[in-house]
Amino acid sequence: MSRYDFLSIESIHNKIVSNVRENLHYLDVSIFNHILSGRDKEMPSHSIFESTSHGSLGSKIFILLRDRILNESYKCGDKLNELTLAKELKISRTPIREALKQLELEGLVESIPNKGVYVKGFSPRDIDDMFEIRLSLEGLAVSFAIDRMDEVHLAKIKEVFELLEFYTTKGDFDKVNDFNILFHESIYQATQSTYFEQILKDIHYYVSVTSRHSIARPERLESSLAEHRAILEAIIDGDKDEATERIQRHIRKTQMLVRKYYATRK
Figure 1: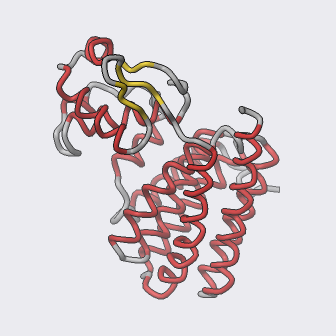
Figure 2: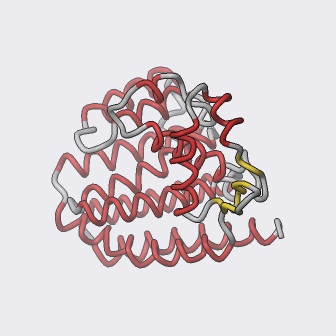
């Protein structure tokens, strides 16, 4: 039985969120607040375009379009029209053009002369490659984290896990996916290595978003939670070998599910 069974949703949510906020010294607070707000991920609020504190307008449009591609709002072969997007988002075509160029560099779209820009998305091989890279680097990252983390880092990992556990008990797939990302990012940040954090955040973001459809089943929610709990326990124990083995086993299981998902879509 979950330790949340005898408490109200509101009291648990408020307590955990309050605790996590106190330990968000290294976490992107805007991302955390976005998750908790439950806003539609497909359409950003006006503030994301009006504010310049988090990068250029073109970069924000890139993130929006990238998310639509990875969430399959745009399908492989769909055409992305500059003028249509500019009208939809009520902005000029210049940042749209900048975003499309960045998407092309990421391999998510293809620009065909005299025809336009078309969605490519990720191939199963692309995703498999990212899993293999993540498998190698994340095992090293958790080992570094155990060596280098302080009490603040460990407290943050624990609190993010509590939120992951809470939303798993509620069957909230979207929140579980979000806090799964934050759990792993908290480990990356605990390495106190800018290089590790940035490389792994980029890879893990793509893997997590492309994985969400394949793991959105109640039985996978429970098994994934157990895997994250085992990782956390090894981190708390300071057992680098066990933590590495457990995090790599977790990645392998997710990889197998993603392979099955994309195999059915051929």
